[in-house]
Each structure stands twice: as structure tokens, then as C-alpha cells.
Image 1 (tube, rainbow, N blue to C red):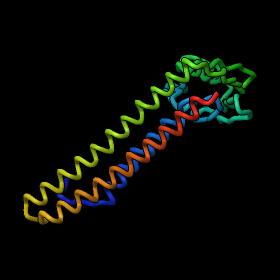
Image 2 (cartoon, helix red, strand yellow; image 1 turned 90 degrees about the vertical axis):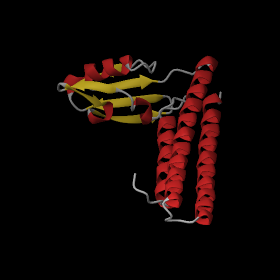
Image 3 (cartoon, rainbow, N blue to C red; image 1 turned 60 degrees about the horizontal axis):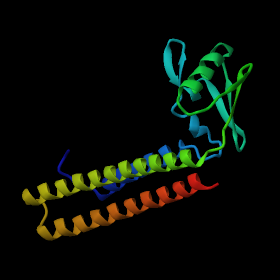
Length: 186
């Protein structure tokens, strides 16, 4: 890493951790259908493994139903198998090239598991944000050691970086609290 400190770069990296977390949260099932639920599904197609969204259109016609309109009729069975084998607890029903995927009701035990998983995702995001802060502080230390910045500037930029870190951690905590409420709703 070059010895150049940029607040914008640190902010961009921390924001990336937060947006990654929100993407992971969108894949957690909360009782409502979301096309993001099928993001982890990989389909064997044309000799390769591809994401499900590259072989069909995913939509949510109802709040508790997903559909996958497979573009190639020959891949419908492969898509069905991929969804069943993905470990999501979903059982698609084939209707030609259209797969209907009803979402079962979440029980309390599964809700608690999902809540724990959301907490793990949030902790990983917090760690990523703290690692960005550590990298920034290391750069500031090297700049001060090389006499490119003074002790006062190191201190003020360090405080600025800490405020940025605190704000992103607060965003992560808010996203986690919101997701946990969504999961635990009955």
C-alpha cells in the first residue's frame, strides 16, 4: 500500500463493508419472498456452474411465492435440482419451464437461527470496518515516522478516522437491529 492517506478511500472501503452486509442480509429469508433468496443457487448449465439468474428470470408474484421462468426448457430440471440442493429448505414445483417455489412459514427456532446468522454477518462487517481503520492508522504512523506529516496532523486525522469508523459501526448496528426485527416478526 502506498504511503498516502485518503479519507475518501477509507470511507469508500468502510461503505463497501456496509453494503456487502446489506447484500448478505437481503439473502436471509424473513418470511417474505425476495429474489435475493436464490442468489446463492448455482446451476449446472452447458458444462459450467452459473448463478441461477443467468438461466432464468426470478420474480415474486406473491408475498410467499417465488417463480423462476427458465429460458432454456432443457435446463428446467437442472434448475429444480439446484434449488433443492442449495440447502435453503425450498421445494420448487415444476410447470413446464416455470418453477413455482412456495416459501414455508418460519418457525421460532429457525427465526432464532437466522437472527444468529445475521449477527455473524454483522460482526464480520464490523471487523472489516475496523481493519480499514487499522490500515489507515498504519499509514498515518508511517507518514509521521517519515516526517511527511506532523504529530498534530496524525492525531487529528486519527480522530477523523475514528469518527468515520464509529459512524459505519453505527450503520451496521442499525442494519442488524432492523433485520433482527424483520426476522422475529410473527
